[in-house]
Image 1 (cartoon, rainbow, N blue to C red):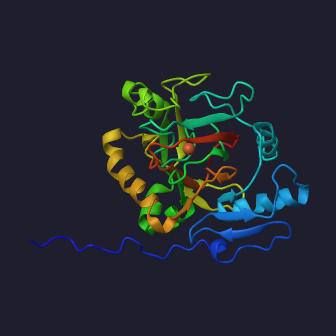
Image 2 (cartoon, rainbow, N blue to C red):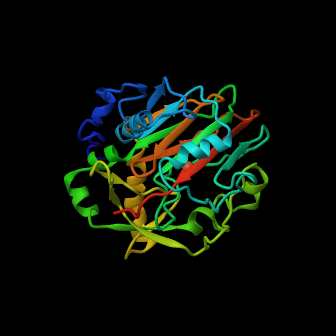
Image 3 (tube, rainbow, N blue to C red):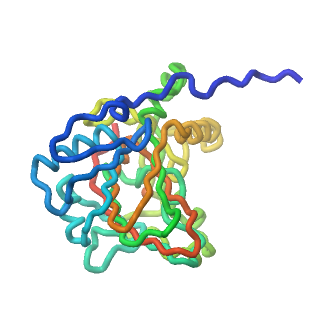
Length: 308
Ligand SMILES: [Fe+2]
């Protein structure tokens, strides 16, 4: 029976130029992780960093979207001090924070956990009016094997859509829902989920079950001026002005497109690794492949601007 001809998914090659041609840095050594995004940064102590070194890290983050720093020795207070250099820190009302350091959320996986934290492709907290621009996670305890985090470049996700699809999506906005991600009907809201994870999530602080925030489907990065696809299945409930049923077919296409392997890199953690990423142009996914092992991460989010 004749069907439609399958076409190549990749209409155009995905090119993120800084991965092939990293900038010049005096203080830091930058090694790209893949053709799409991400860089390992060495030769720097994040607890003892002058202004010039900090400026180089800011520039490298704009270029590579994800930076991973192995072999750091950061107590929570030192991590907080480093994070503050990027801007005001945000409260995270959806998980328990450290008693002595309310800016830090401790993400713990115990050996008998079945579910993990962040085990879906997402950008952090689009269910805020001004979602965090940067997330910074420090690994205190790493599993012997597994527990990597994957990242996906959402500039490339946007730029590789067809002209027609980009014209369609350009004026559109989507509704990002707290209930979808953390509500009683959500995956993480189920009793069985909460009973089998050491980092349960829920709706606390000033967040409300029926919070919804409208953001552009393609947001423009304030530093680069480039557009990045900004919808993820953890939070985007529907397009504004449309029903969920009308929205889902196209959302599902975008969710699948956004995480093509050509757009990704993978970060391996060891105790002492700090990784930071730009939520405005990258999504991430915490691999849940280390049953029987322990993993402890300390996470901080830095306030961002209203997406435009
Ligand atoms: Fe996350």
